[in-house]
Length: 173
Image (cartoon, rainbow, N blue to C red):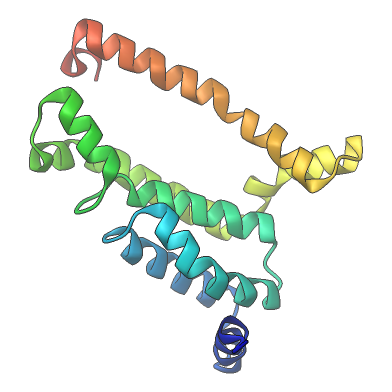
């Protein structure tokens, strides 16, 4: 047992990087990894390294998990590995280059959201804290209820896909 993640955490903290610097480094590292790897591989490789550093710097584990998920979503939407681009390309019959250009406004919006989620933790923590504080739920149950709030967004996306199929993406946008 080499404890490599803990040694890396100690080394990074020893450099004097603070919370803001670490979050910036983590975002850049996760976004760069998103260029070449799928999300499950990134989480399996980088979470054991980054998580101990985040905990030692006092970053809320739920906030850091949400930060990683948002980074993975951004990675799914840009080339060269962006799986969502390939799925959308197959559905729309558009080339990857054309589709990449068409998605730039959404990608930039996602990056702005990533910055907001990164540096304003109460945005991602209010619902779990509310459920734990008011209803006395444990973190797992609160997380599952929080995840259920993504269901309306999924329904909205599905309805948007239906409208796109029925009327054409260009007329809807």
